[in-house]
Length: 252
Ligand code: 9WO
Image (cartoon, rainbow, N blue to C red; front, top):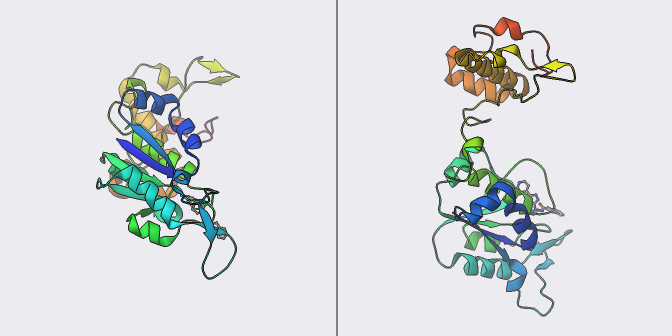
């Protein structure tokens, strides 16, 4: 999958996305990060990309011409989805990530200042996407968030030790608490059931912990899950009574 990223800060995007798991995915040829410097497409001596807004008011706008020419250079007539990262966009979710993971090329447009001249966005047929309700200084970090979330769903990007679908949101629930060695640390023991070797009881405990954690932290997700799985309300599972006392997990 090719990610074209139109940005004023290609170094930031490349540094962030060619590291760790995504760096390996790029080496393996599973993804390609094509960071395109919008400033290279300016046509003035000062390489300026911004200008004042018609109608007045504070702030500057990125001009249509360099953004659109960067788009033409990156996307060269191939038909594919174009995404503009903006607080005014459709909310990016795990479901949205899965939808995008089926594409073979997408272009991400990163704005700065007060945004981009609307005509360039229209000409690129850009779909506005938001990663959450806050304002940043530019679209680069949201673009990197999107690339990360989409890339890890591409087959081969995650190894066996990092499987994609048992984790938070894969099934609509938050992940259960997890423990590694040692069995006791700072006076806190790993829950005995995880040491029992009884895989059926471990699975039941994990599902129950996922339900309790989701109910406590994300009641919105919990209600959705219970509507779809009415037989699986938290507190119904065998062995649950043991877990009702407060533990260091912060759950009861
Ligand atoms: C800046 C500004 C300055 C004065 C008056 C109004 C203003 N609006 C903005 C503004 O929204 N700037 C954005 C900065 C333009 C697009 C890129 N920027 C951005 C993207 N900030 N936050 C995001 C973003 C993207 C996706 N999900 C969450 C936040």
